[in-house]
Image 1 (cartoon, helix red, strand yellow):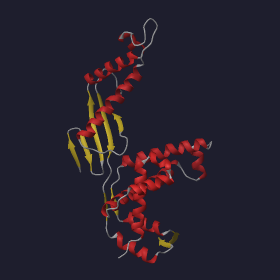
Image 2 (tube, helix red, strand yellow):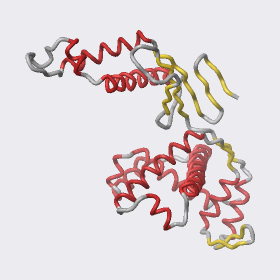
Image 3 (cartoon, one colour):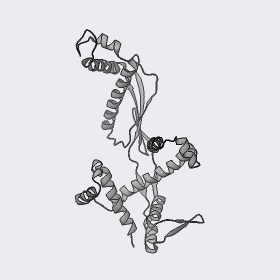
Image 4 (cartoon, helix red, strand yellow):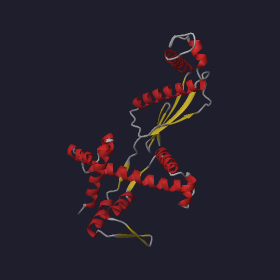
Length: 279
């Protein structure tokens, strides 16, 4: 199911898609504005800074570069406008696709912008009875598929929670996280003086296998994060100013990311709630 509003699609998993057209008039207006902006800082022989005629400035500018700048500004402005008009709360940077390439100053631009909001999660409350059993027995191991794996209590509880969660994660969200993780891996391997291929070879993995494992990890992390948020609302779990201050005293650098501080405290409180859940 999806809701259509002219050039806007909103999917049930939280994905949204805009198909927009930037007219030649809009593009030319932006082009003139870009030229004037470039003129104010332009220096060339025979003219003082900012005093060269527009036709001279235009000849000296790289057309591909100015088109890139125009596209970036116009798309960003249009996207922000559409977000406000449709009351959306995107959680990742959008994907941009030109649907009538190549772009030039002589024609309109058709653009597809895809983003997503936070997906909704449903938690089957039956998870509580299973968690209560874990808490009452507090076993050190758990049997799955005829194999015994070492798990601590929290791991077992989180496995139960995930099993009882229903959520449709947007593909764009998973792909965005995979791209970020791959970028981090490239940086880390480069610092170690090896390539990604060499690193994966030490793990006896192909790139495809690594991405499959990464997808599973990211999916699990998102389900747990969404479940934590849902349980904190359900149980009216709050984070106090004092708790935030105490954590920042221990980790002053975390003051640069207040959202992370809030989340970590909330996470710990939800974990404590789950580990002490009783009949």
